[in-house]
Image (cartoon, rainbow, N blue to C red; front, side, top):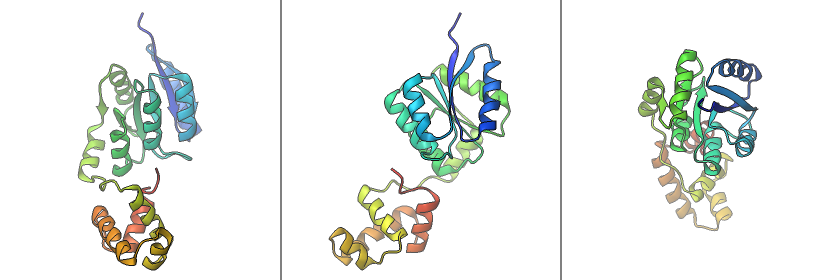
Length: 207
């Protein structure tokens, strides 16, 4: 008999985890081996339990699903990450897929879709829901920022002036202006306020 698919569930809502445990454990080919209520505990549990599949919520405390996906796959590249979310933000979803998630399903989708996605990913395939992929393609994330650009943008979100930023980084105000011009172009914004708002909304400063 084929071994059961060993599943770790990462979601910060207990009722959601309970429902998924019940759903998976009645499947003849699946078994839940662990639960995690935030991104950091998901990474720790995955390293310890070595699951075949991780059901990953995108929006979780301490570490979001996209970053947890990268951390888990760095430790165990064979794990299959299936994103399950009710908030299909195109930027976070694109990051999760870029970080190696091979499945993506909406929590509102039929349970049969999720079960099939798990089996597909466990067999080495990909199961990315068409509506989620359409959202990602229609709203592509901005190009990644360098570490220095992130640091300067973080200073902008703190309300620092160009002169303040120049002093903080030991560069000239002219250099600060050039850095900000590149950052604004990458983000597709025109003002400091727009850049700061986008940085906070899209979690651009998280590493």
